Image (cartoon, one colour):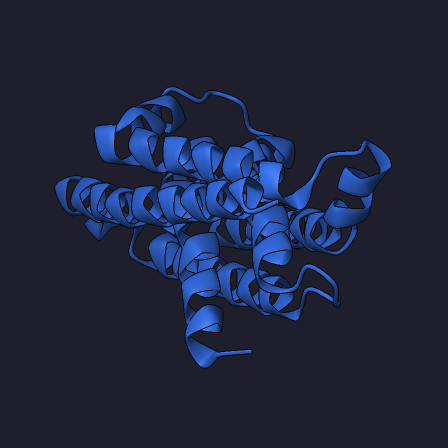
Length: 197
């Protein structure tokens, strides 16, 4: 397994999970709560998200086989979904939807971080990098992304009063461009493999 694949996978998962927007959502949903409550909220949300994404990476291919879906087709569909999430990040739609969220449950943040796009990315990484073996690349990428997300949210809680919203938007849009490119790469690789069958 090439080292660059781990880097690519880690960047993909981190971008799709979008730690910065997740942090803004948490600060919005937990506004007025103590720092301790926010930390507990963060621990619960990131733990549940990690379990969901790891389960998706490890069992995703088995589920595909059960329903008779080829890895090549899933690479195409998964890549398109990932690219769509990237487009939403680039256009600012994800940021707008998170800003309008009024719920205060852990599940809301989990649903955002373990979105269909994140789950598709986990399964796609598993299918692309390790189609016939334990998905170590996807697992490493998920753990890295969730640790990064956890740390970034904690930092955002500490610096809540100093968050620069315009800088946050620029970062989200930049990561959106990256994830669009990676999603399209997955889709085109899947198409190439499908046409070679």
